Image 1 (tube, rainbow, N blue to C red):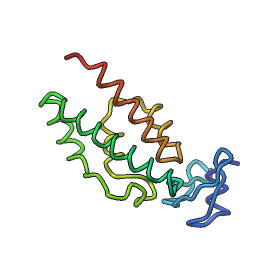
Image 2 (image 1 turned 180 degrees about the vertical axis):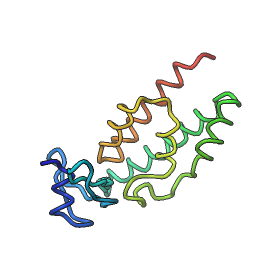
Image 3 (image 1 turned 90 degrees about the horizontal axis):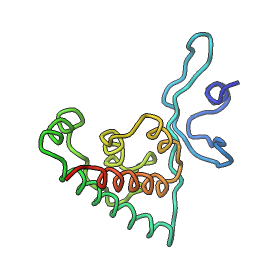
Length: 150
């Protein structure tokens, strides 16, 4: 039995599921049947942090956002135009990084425009910690910034 069919048949919106030995919240976007198999599409909610961990998360969030803006600004004009035409402008930085259960909007925009293979994107999306996702994106930004010819 697939995770999707278990969720689809037995678990309702806003319930807690077990993913890799971690309890996480999720939103059920859609469920149905395809090729005689039950399936569903869910969005995992990020784990929330408080106290000193939260303060560290805010610093990391702000730092990675600034790094992303610097990377995008440094791109050649034709590349920026292509990205802007296809994806629109980069969303602004939210004052509260945990306000959206799926993570900041600018983060999703950046994940879409960075030169990443689908496999790498999925690995990042599977993370349920915003801190881990931000650290992964920071590594990618460092890599693409160093790799680019000057």
